[in-house]
Length: 281
Length: 298
Image 1 (cartoon, rainbow over the protein chains, first blue to last red):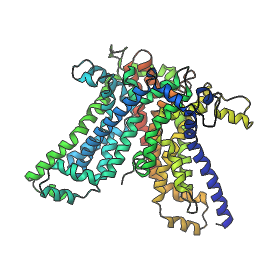
Image 2: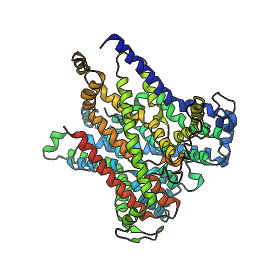
Image 3: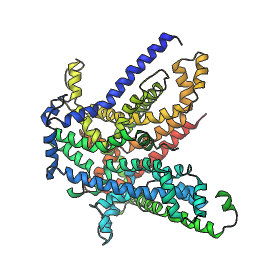
Image 4: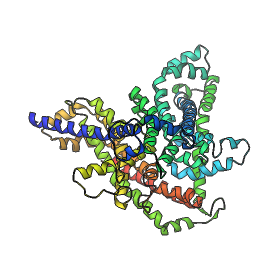
């Protein structure tokens, strides 16, 4: 290939990649600018920073907007789901690798099948199941219109089990063996040795779980009928759909809702991309 | 551990086996209750009809009704339109971006990668609403096009049957192209550079290299991304709900959106909704099998 041709190709690549990068980043700039402007300025497509951020925040703090309730519900469901999910799925994944048996391999393969089942195909029976729970004394606590109903179905996912099972393969079995000889129990081996050694795997798993429950929309939409249990995506949706939508406040709300994942992305980019794309060591 | 299990089981092995079952029990129980049981229940419901909880056996009634349901036909048409147009555009675009980022002489690769993956940090509702304001009738994009002299009348992105479909396609492409590009970037890094060097010596052009080296070696990755994108598109809901709410006049409604409407917007018809969902599962299974067939040939 000639030198000039190479240079021309490189130039085309720069132009193209800059253009694509701009398109990808622009909506972020747009929402940050929007968050500092009034609703009418956003509608007039004002492209410079304004001074309405404080006002927008105050609008969002009004109880009838439901933003504070939504934010706290989302934080609670996300934290609980992520912690439970990490515990349950890492134990299972660890077991599938560390205590291999043919019967458990079969179970694993069956569990893996659920990755092919679209949520929309099970949402109807699932909804009916939680509606039934409302009629039973103890289960009522996790029935429709509770945060528990949003958490329970998303705790155990085939993806995370698979993820931990694959990553556990890089964990040294000799280490577990040695600990066993030293008299450590199986739970202690898991918590005191596997967990600290596999910190980055747990971090990646936590990111996956966090992103899923922070952004979950369809299932909470079905389950949360009363305003007290609405989550952030539903609140954003309501802010955007209303006929008297305050676009400045909406953009502020969106920026706040995007902030946690943006922080994780910029602080732990490697783990974030690995988690999102399901990369397995 | 593996060798040991072949020998007669001692007390330690038995204990470890018990622990093994204990450790998998929580996760398995949750999946059985919240995924497997609903799947079986959905199969049962698909053959029932009625309103709310007043359900009775209907045989093939739901499936006969589906054949006459005009809105459902629209939902299927739209979903497949998104599938056929959006998925190839997105995957090819992702492939182009990934192979450009392979160029040894290119600088700022990290910066480009960071920017291109950026859309993946947004939630479906958040980005849908942001892009909705940009594509509003008097919005930024129309203003820009008018100023450049490309259009004289604003494009009705939210109110026109054709343009609203295009908007859905644009929006999903924005969100998922970088995501798919990441798979290709990882896949390309596993290809030996010496193969390309040899091709260079043989005088192969960049298109030929794409056709005869990159595409075949990336086949498993391309297969994976096309299956996941297909499943994702068939489940499309959040974006359409928040941008057009299925409108205008069901012009953008998706299958998931219609299932939602059948259950939760009008009278709850759980049986009919489950029958539609069953058809979607069958379609996903067929399409995945088909894609694997095509991807595995040669």
